[in-house]
Image (cartoon, rainbow, N blue to C red):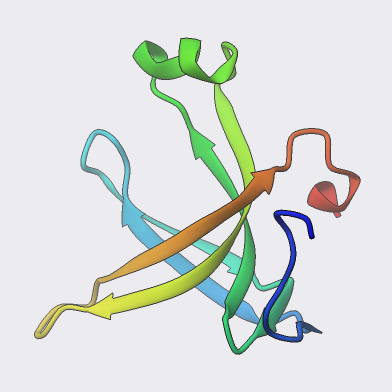
Length: 101
């Protein structure tokens, strides 16, 4: 069984979604994206994370870390438009042909 093994059946389904958050400087951002596939266990997403310069040595000097993850939890904050999303990292996606398509 690989790290990418699934307990739930996945369905290839591309749905639009909006990713919102704050960058390392505290500036708000919003980004349009889409799911790649979904299951009862969560949506599989491709994350591109900008690595701050002091941490790049831990990522082979890369400016960005690209990884597949599954969104497995979402917490809404009462009275706010923001949410917290928990994701389980599956594997590094650097050089992954599917990641660019």
